[in-house]
Image (tube, rainbow, N blue to C red):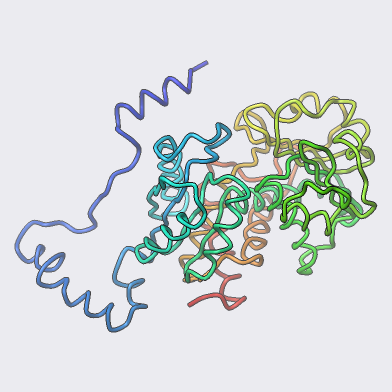
Amino acid sequence: MEDYNKASVAMHSELHGKLEVKSKVELNDRRDLSLAYTPGVAQVCQEIAANPERVFELTLKYNTVAVVSDGSAILGIGNLGPEAAIPVMEGKAVLFKEFAGVDAFPICLKTQDVDEIVHAVRMIAPVFGGINLEDIAAPRCFDVEDRLQDLGIPVFHDDQHGTAIVVLAALINALKVANKKLNECTIVFNGSGASAIACARLILNYGSLGKAPLPGDVIMCDSKGIVHRGRTDLNAHKKELADRTNKENRQGNLADALKGADIFIGLSLGNLVTQEMVRSMRPHPIILAMANPIPEIMPDEARKAGAAVIGTGRSDFPNQINNVLAFPGVFRGALDAQAKVVNEDMKIAAAEALANYVIEPTPERIIPDALDKEVGRRVGAAVAKAARATGVCR
């Protein structure tokens, strides 16, 4: 089996990164130079100064996204700083281009201060049609995103909402396969960081916006056990979810939470769920174990314990829950509609488009293949339609 770590380092070393700047125009004679630069470009500047909205028509802004990170939560590796974040942000930019035709550029900031990150993004925003926040640790990521919603262009934290969109899509189809109804199901989350909180919120909002019935119940677990209303150590985001979930205010650990549950969604650490825990759930449970590289429970173990549907974050098992299915299409649709924000309706539209792309879900296929390049177009069209319908376009 190929050593991907060694091969990836060799590729990056040979290419000196994965991105380059390519001109759309040729400079073969003086006319070309006069149109692309001086004197002709001066009139383009005047047009934009007279009507700032024409910047979307006359510059790269209409199709360009900044992928912004402070390097504090790189993949599953941790806080490695801005320089070490560059390869990942370059990779995200490649995915934007390959899966949705969006031009993206990595912006890795040498600060982990909320005020400074927000200020930096505001200062660079004139060039970009959207901002994709990436690998910024919680709870800082919530504050940064919230404070940038008035920017006039979409600001979207992929680790939160990209994950949530794909999880909701997988859940919609997994319920069909397992013959379960959302309003009769108890969902247990393990992990209550940015991704898990966003997933729980989107599933709850899916019901509260009338798109589907509300789940029977949602129980959040963190490293200290079940999130309940009696705990005094909860941050504001966990406290908000404690008030919206865990109807019986159950207490205990993950094993206690899973007893009688229907769905497990893991965004935590590997090998935390046992076969015994799965057997304690209701018949034909749904297991989405997304810790990387080792899931909370390996698929073969979950299957032996009676799981009806199993998804992971890995590409070597069926049902890979991968953000690449969401963020390129979300920005494609937001840019095409010239949306000012990405709202809940747009996220839900993306999830439904993903789910509907799989015409006949099976235990081995509840979600599209991560390499299917048609997905970005489908998601983009659904997101653009939702943006126009909800009146968030310029």
